[in-house]
Length: 223
Image (cartoon, rainbow, N blue to C red; front, side, top):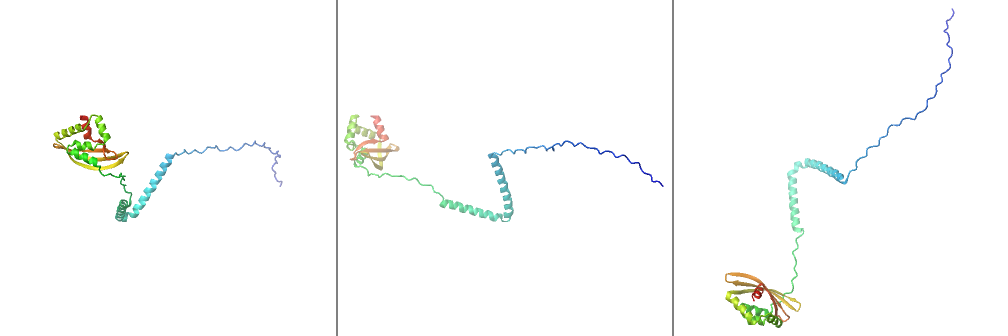
């Protein structure tokens, strides 16, 4: 038998493919990461305060769970510590320092001034005038005052019922070319009483060279 053969196809030439141009691979789009906003000093402080508050709250809850069975005991202990602390502060705490005053060396009352006081109490112008220093007598005479006017003032005071009840010597101090003596005098005029200050300025011999008192200023204004 004859074999049937398929007709052979003519061999075709191979197809040549043109190389495609190479394109660079497309890079994915780049997006810059978002910039975190800067937190200011107040913001940081607020965050820190919030964190501390949360930690404190959490710690309080944990501590509360632990000490709940011993709550009464803890309260007593805290009260005792408070009392001990208060007593310690009162005992060893800073104390208010009392003010310190430096007192000048006090002088005893001068004899001429004591004689003036006795003359004033007895309305005796001679004793008062003799207690004045020579310069003070001269200044009184220059201003129109004399022993006679001094006696007239004393008589007027006695007539109106003025009484020099009591003198308290406060003290005396040395000053330039003399000294100063401080007194308080209790006065009585009928049913009224008053206490007035009197300051005597004296020379080196204790003689009066000046008197400062509301009573003497009133008397001088009435001349």
